[in-house]
Figure 1 (spheres, rainbow, N blue to C red):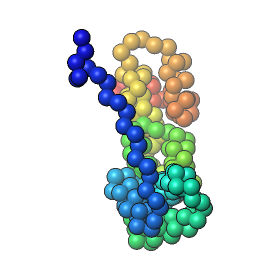
Figure 2: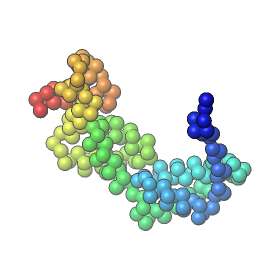
Figure 3: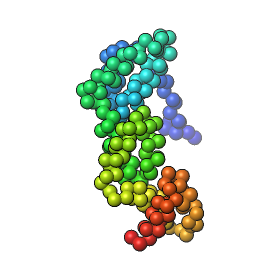
Figure 4: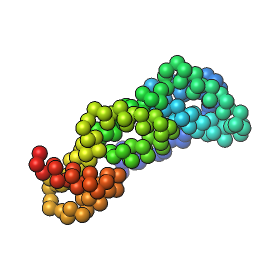
Length: 184
């Protein structure tokens, strides 16, 4: 016997998107910026997705709102709400701490829409604080993934080196991280 509480809740229908206006885009952008740190290009993509969804529903041409989105992003960059260099430095610091390789960091941040020059500058700043930042990141990765001396079960070194290689670390750095951790 099923009771009312045993029933699966029915999926709610999505509300139709609001019509695009300058005020709507400003509110959407500010709400997004309150929740997430983001580079300018990513904010532009988020707002253009909203525009496209709304324009498709209301059967309006989406290209007419592109200058409005561009002006909004430019204004937020001028005011300082969106700053690519600050975002790049913060993300590089966080990703290095997580144990990501240089290649992996560059790929992730370029996917967010950051220029390679901004990413390289942030990497130089963050990496200047450590003697061998790639080795430190590889060691953090090995510790997080429980590879090398942190593993629970005996495993082949080749598999661990392959995992480190897929994460973007060179063979020499991966081998050094897996072997140096044993002495810690």
